[in-house]
Length: 376
Image (cartoon, rainbow, N blue to C red):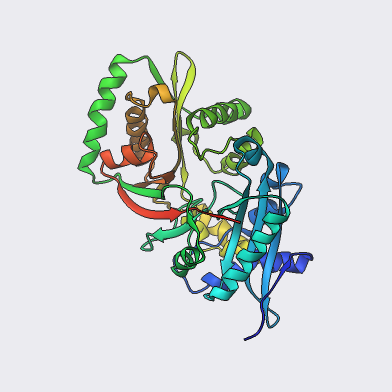
């Protein structure tokens, strides 16, 4: 059998091969939504990538007989490792043909990279972005992923477990809520009205003119709410990097803040599921794909509204604020022509927020992903 050589990405040609390798894996998969190459290039750019502003990473391609057969990235998040003291080697951009030897060669190279830098364990897969397309898909291959959700072949899970990777935390999950014909939504409407009648609560849409102030609000909520043992502290620049791409596409009426006495205490941030458009535009790989994107964006007819953040301050999680925000979001989404709401991605053990709330109103669990860990 020919040998597998895993080498770092050095040239522009190799960088493009690295970024476009997923087309080799998913070209015949009708559920795959190609990543937008211009955005992926930014992630790898030391001057633009949010991760690389507070970390380092190297990128590798596995070669056999002169052809690329897999890719992996190994990285160190300085801020996260300093604050958590876990010595994690983040891995991602992890794509490979259905060949266990290729898988092992890529993991071994990433492990070698991590050990050389004194790191202790793997954590991933993350494509240098803790909120975009992370984890290995475990279940839910009946529909394409929504915005920021990942998709992987069935053999990825088996290879991870065969090598000795273990779950780093509970499943990450997505729920689907039909908002057109769903009698369970009455469970939200009545208590929402009662709570509003007795509480001095204000619900407002996002003020995109006051962008910096709104990012400050989100940053404070994230670092207050997400404080579990696996929570990674959020740098403000990372928060802005995540939300900035949505500044042009977000409908401020559907990014809801709840305030009590002028203080922001909760956020429901929803955006149109542009993956319904991107699935047809080939990741903007070629110039003519831009024309296709412009044509489709003129009248997108997007059916899904993707709820990407549910953040409620701890002291208000057992009150009715979440119910009020959900009732308001459903009403506004229905008026704008959406037919269903996706709740993703959240941890299955985050019972106070998305999972618990979703199940109470009749939402369906329809996708699960797993993030893994393993000693180096």
